[in-house]
Image (cartoon, rainbow, N blue to C red):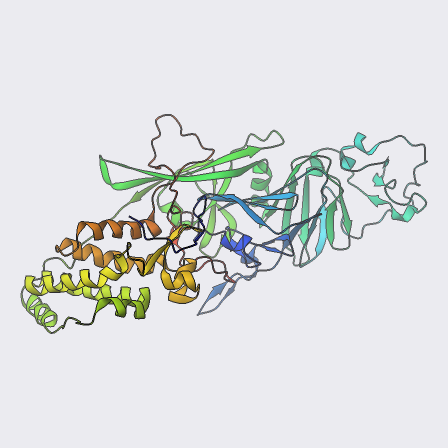
Amino acid sequence: PWPRAPAGAKATRAPVATGAWHTNLARGDQPSASTPYALRFKDRALEISYGADRRAATKASVADPFVADVVVATTNPTDPKLAEADALTARLAFGPATAWLARGSPYVTVEVSTGATVTFSSAHGFAKADGGAAAPDARPGPDGPAAPAPDDEAACSAHASCANLEGVCCPTAQGVFLGCCDDRRLATARRRLATNETKETQRVSLVLDDGSEWLLYASRPVAFETSGKTLSTGPLRRTTVFRVARAPDAAATALLDAHRGVFPIGGAVSWRASRTEPDVMTLHFRWATRRFDGCAAPLLGLALPHHLQTLAGKASPTAFDALKGPLYAVAGDHWTFREPLGELRWDLGDVRGPRRKILRDLVGDERIDEEAPGPAAKAAGVYSSGKKLFRLAALAQAAHVAGDPKRRDAFSARLADELAPWLAFDDASSLLVYDAKTGGIVTRAGFADPNADFGNGKYNDHHFHYGYLVHAAAVARRYGSLDDAAAARTAALVLDYANPTGRERNLPAPRGYEPYVAPRSSYLPVARHKDWYDGHSWASGLFELADGKAQES
């Protein structure tokens, strides 16, 4: 059973992942953290920040400030649009470019279509650019080559360094010069290209003015030009994949070089339990990949410290860092974790002796509220009502442990009464409604006003708000006060924030692999608030926050 949708509400084809790490990216110019980078779109360009280089730590806080270390811009840009996303990756389109983003990737990958020009810049400026381009402001020496004769037939396409250029190049002993695309009468307009016409044009080392080194890779040879503090291509003759990465030390550089040609295009999280090990859940992260340049290396990812506690497989230390700790290199497109489930206790357990009498006296002093529950719940809102219900549920549990079934049943019955306004789904004035446009259960007040109920209508805090209601319903059900219809409606609340159903995309299961991934839900996203990579939930929904997502408590 579901709450009714308000009259005139528009339906959605698929539920929106309102708690996902990437929500800021297509909603404004605030950053999202992909780890190890923070990313944002500003002025229709993708900005990449490695905040660990600027970490500011005090007794009160640790912050990695956002600075646009590298900016990727194209001709004919558009506002970013989320094209597709899953539990581990997101694909955003902006103009002729597509950003393939993945949690824990040491690279930021952007694919750019034929005919577009790509510009790379930095808020710091480039102190040096080696590989596919000369350092900024480099000029031919006085003994540089003369402008090519008009009848020179050395086409740009004949030289790897000039593959993206139209016209005539000037390969000489001093290097490769481009003069034909400038005014042929101005020899000073010629620019030096790479002296190496091999795959070196697919890799550029960028040293920023702050001293940090970044690496830029291309899936095919590209001729880069420098102008002021930017590095740019000409119109691309073919669709090209560019990968940008911070190189914190020489070991990281070697690692990035070795794995540059394989990148993730999709991901899936799945899990399974075994009857032989009921206290252990096996969790799987798997990625679908693409390759270029004949790369045979496995996919490179970075794991957080908490991953290592349950990760089955090898992880090697790196110089990469994040707010949650140092990052570890993991090679492969399939990570497996063995997660112990731990013990869940229902109540305080067996309380005996003087403590039991004290508890019984305390419970006996509590008085049950006689106020009509409907108007009170509406006036208080879901958060305050939920906390009141949680307290009442705790009293019912305490009375049970203290051996006072009469008080326990009284508290339990009041729980069911106060839950009723929240579970009256069939009532046209019910306090909860189904948001068919986004895919979720929200308060009626939140649906009308996004700021009401602490942002419930924009999917803030649902695991807090509804968690109180669900706990109260579980206690009332345990002690016989909640009927079957109310219990079924409670299950709908559980699914709003803890829906386990989904589907795997682009990832055929290996033989003998049987993950628990149920058919795709048409009503609700999978695990609304859960961030599988970070290992916890985010409280913030569709509100933009300057620091990305927040858990609040």
